[in-house]
Image 1 (tube, rainbow, N blue to C red):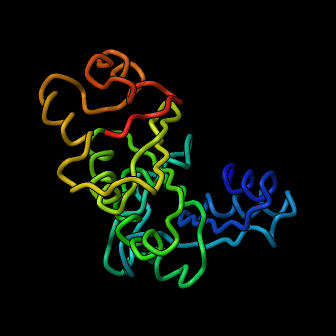
Image 2 (image 1 turned 45 degrees about the vertical axis):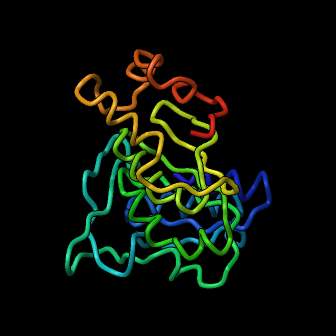
Amino acid sequence: IGNHALFFAKVTGAKVLAFEPNPEAYSILEANVALNQLTEEIDLHKIGVGSGEGRGEINNVSDINLGMAKVVSAEGGSVEIRSLDDVLGSQHVDLIKIDVEGMECEVLKGARGVLERCKPLVIAEAATLEELSGIEHLLRPLGYRKVQRYNDTPTFLFQYGFEPRAAEETYTGNILKSVEGKMSPRLGRNSLWRCREILGPWAGQGRNLPDL
């Protein structure tokens, strides 16, 4: 727990803000940060991140993989939810890394001010074509596009500095229309390679991606 936070703080010397709403995972994260003597470099927040202020509950908890848990909105829930715009205020951000089990779009909706002001790199997981299309729907009009793909559960690097396009013109949205009913919506390694003739370079792990 906290692998990326520890790496960025210890190896690159970055100041890190880490968000973990799951109490069990937070306790492990807190211990790992202390063991690595990074309490000054990593600012821990025991909250969920979403499109705005609210409450939620931890769902899909697994004893095998704490990373599978997700926060779902619930009135009066035990988890505090805040937006990145609210938490960060005027702080500058160079990179936003998001892995929230399908809630990436909610995080991005609450970070629009930060994205427009700081234009950080964005790393986001997208386990399905629908999730990726949703992320692109939010980021492409702001001048972002995906430039690389990593991991077995696809994780994409988005970079600012390209001509903004209307959300409906996203590459993934067009893919969804063209292959509707022809392939599994899951973006696992096997389905990606089976559909490489459709997806082109986008299917290649670690490859640079075209401006599509």
